[in-house]
Structures are given as C-alpha cells and as structure tokens.
Length: 183
Image 1 (tube, one colour):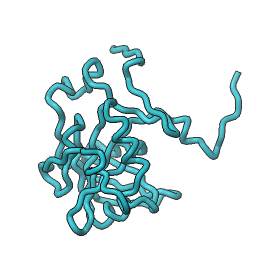
Image 2: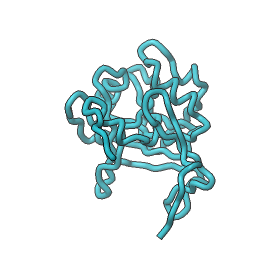
Image 3: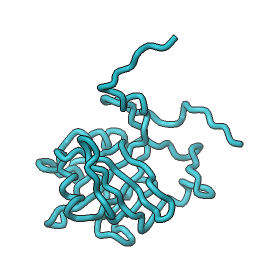
C-alpha cells in the first residue's frame, strides 16, 4: 500500500545523495567551502558538472564572481567536518581553519582542492541559471584528480572507499550496508 508524500518536501524522496565539499574563493583570494548534496553530471561532451545553490548562501556570490569551483568528493569518516561546513556560513566563520581541512593547489583552476577528499573535479563556470529558488552553476570540468586506490577502471572501489551520503535533516550514511550487483 502507498501513502501520499509531501510535495513541499519532494526532494527528500531523492535522498540519499552523495555529499561533496565545494571550494571557491573570494575577491581577497581566501578559500571558502560549502557542503552540497544537490549536484550532478550535466554532459559528457563537453564535460559539464552542475551544482545547485540558494542565492542566500555565501558561496553563491563567490562562485558567480570567481567563475571557478572545485567539487571535492568526501569520505564517510569526514562526516563531522562536512556537517560543520554545511551548517556554518563562510561570511562569519573560517570553515577551513575550524575543520582543519588541508588545501592543496588544483591543477588548472585557482581554487584549491581539499587534500583529505578522495576525488576532485576542477570546474570553470560556463553558465549559471536561475531555476526556481536556486541557481544552477554549470562548470566545465577542466581537470580531475583522484586518490590512486579509489578507482579501478574509473569505477569507485566501494570495497575500499566509503563515500558520504546525505539522507536529509542532520542524517548521513555510506555504502557499507548496500548490496552491489554487477552485470
């Protein structure tokens, strides 16, 4: 038997979604980080990736002005740091300092990667679209970095890597309880 769901909370039905930390820079070259679950591949050719941000978020204007961002894929063991970065504003908090995340230079953009993450998509913004109450920032992926043991044949090694997934509210999970079937 099915029950009616909530249209106001329709997005909850798409969770869990993989959690990422997105880095960006302000006009003084200071790095900010924001936790995002609303992100996706947009195109393979050209390689485009999208992140969705509310205009009220501090990172929104930083990305709009700086036109670059890095999508950093997070290990489950970073859940406390990711939660902190998603619940505090870079307007008043230096989230990099408070979480003790390590920044490393990116290969092709000015925005750094987060060293503790297992993969990074370096993006140059090609378009931003107002879509409802959010802005969809579309970036061309200009470089990809990944931990050498995280992927095999470009597939995430879920037997070795436990990615962080956002369930909603203040809840997170990972893949260790999920079954995997290969064809």
